[in-house]
Image (cartoon, rainbow, N blue to C red; front, side, top):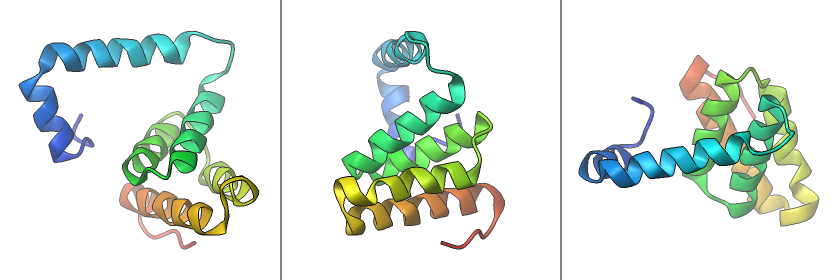
Length: 110
């Protein structure tokens, strides 16, 4: 996984058994219910947005793109947060989404 931040890669190298258990838990949670892949990816993005976690938003965007989620669907997810978590937090998330999209495919604009 070359897209992992350096700090996460170092953790994975230092604690491979813990990393493996974490990956297994994530996979089990991901497959545990009736939601389809694209919906799961948008939910994960929404959770990262609501938590205001920039790194998680970047990761969720990369995973969503790999699963075929459109950039517009990801932007819509951030816009839906405006009335829930507020304009500043939702706008910050939108900029993080754009950063992640740009790093994957070039400039996109907010």
